[in-house]
Picture 1 (tube, one colour):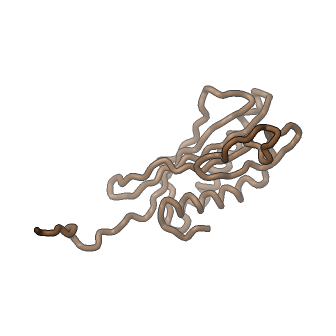
Picture 2 (cartoon, helix red, strand yellow):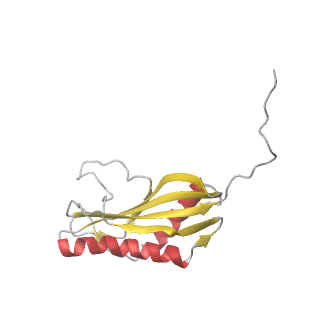
Picture 3 (spheres, helix red, strand yellow):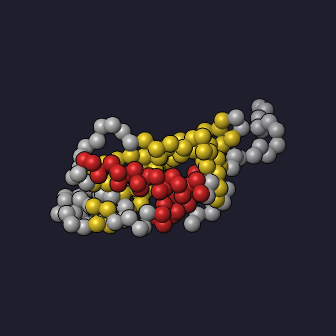
Length: 163
């Protein structure tokens, strides 16, 4: 687990935690008949290869994606999207797999709202499943804001050189 108190430290720590939280799932994959827990990645999935060469199926997956950082009311906030993707031919089941994975992650995040130097901003937490889905692939995401340490001013006005 990363000990950095920056956005990178947050992403690294969340990635490791999410890997632990989703290990019990055995979800359908793009390789027929194969079930496995979601692969957990940062930012994006690896580049696609031809289907017959693809060793690790794209689905299921969870992606921890850095979106932005901002200071609001003196608080340093980092927005993260946690994107879950599953595959299922049954339209009545497909969205459930995505929702189950996202709900588990959200619940675990709320059980441990503070870890290390990071604290979840509960008011900035939501789950979204877009209406447009490209079955048999299903996607949804969590929007989460975390409070992270802010750089402290070390001594007044910045140095200005005089010519």
